[in-house]
Image 1: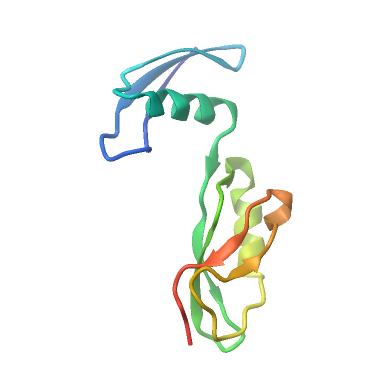
Image 2 (image 1 turned 90 degrees about the vertical axis):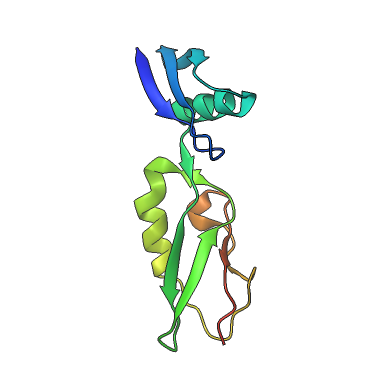
Length: 116
């Protein structure tokens, strides 16, 4: 099976062709650096994404947050719902952890902007 991917590791956005057999990457072409090959392997075997969103604080103000580590792509909806349900009280500071282990993914959810 052949999959076409666009690498998202840098602004070059290499268009890659990935040959996959039995769920394993056999070859990658079109990448201009090793990071493209690593991305293709990851995207085929265990796709992950960083989630950025907002949480409404107890005081009614939006608080921008993101996952500190990428989470499995198939858990994005569940993770987003858990983040939205988090209880946050102002003030919060950049880097403050509001969820220590998001749904067992090992990813922390941190504040990305200080909100008074």
